[in-house]
Length: 290
Image 1: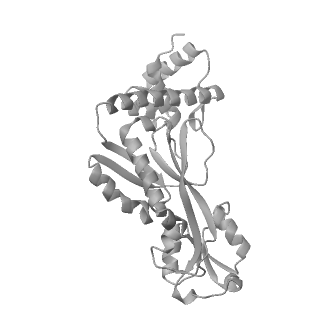
Image 2 (image 1 turned 30 degrees about the horizontal axis):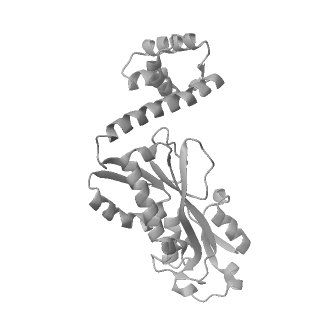
Image 3 (image 1 turned 135 degrees about the vertical axis):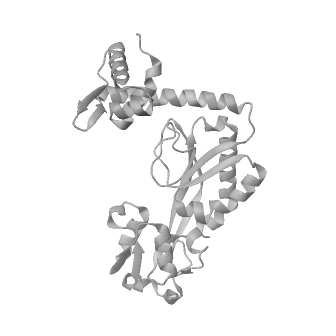
C-alpha cells in the first residue's frame, strides 16, 4: 500500500470544511493539489473516502471509519510529542478545564489563585460548557461533568464528589409550607431541557406557573430579584445568600472528572487533575449542601 500518511491532515480538513477550495486555503495549497492528493489516497486505499453532493464533500461510510482511526493516530502522535517535551519541562503551559459555568464560577475559581501561586507558569482556562467535548481532538484537557459518563476506552473517569440541590428563593418565600410549593412561581429551564434531572424533579411538584430561563446563572439572578423559587445547586444558592425553603437537600448529582487516558503522563495535566480532586475533597460539604 502506497498511502501517504502526510495526507491525513488534508483528509481531516476536507471532512471538517466539506469544501475543496476551503481546504486548499487552510493548508495554503491550490485546489488541484487537494483534488490530486484525495484521488491518490483513495487509489492507495482502494476505497472511496468522500462523495460530493450539493452541500459539498462528505465522507462515505468507509471514509467515516477511516477518519475515526485517523483522529486516533493524530492524537497518539500529539501525545507522543507532548510526553517527550514534558520530560524536559516543569509544570507549565496551557490546561483547559470545561464544566457547567456555575460550578466553575461559584466554586472552582476560588481555588485557582493557590494553584497559580504554586505553579506560576501554568496557563489555566476555565470554559463554561456542558457539551460533550473531544479529548482526542484536544477540545479540552480536563472536564467536570454531572453524573457518570458513558464508558470510553480513550477516557480516564473519576468521581470526585457530589453536587447537592435545594429549593431557593428570596426572603419573601421563607417558611412557605411544602404542600403549597405548587402554587409558587417556579424558575426553570425551557421545555427542550426536560431530560435534565432537575426538570424531572420539578415535574413531581407540578407547579401552576413556570417562568423559563436558559441558564442557571439567569435562574439564580431571578431568585435574587424575588421573581420566584428554583431548584439550584447548593454551592450557588448558599453562596448568593438565597433563602432555602427547607433545610433538606432535594437531589444529588455526581461530579466526575474526565481526561484523556494519557493525560496522567504529562506533568501539567496530572498536577491540575490532582488539584481538582483535592479541591473537591476539601469542599465536599459545600458541594453537597450539607
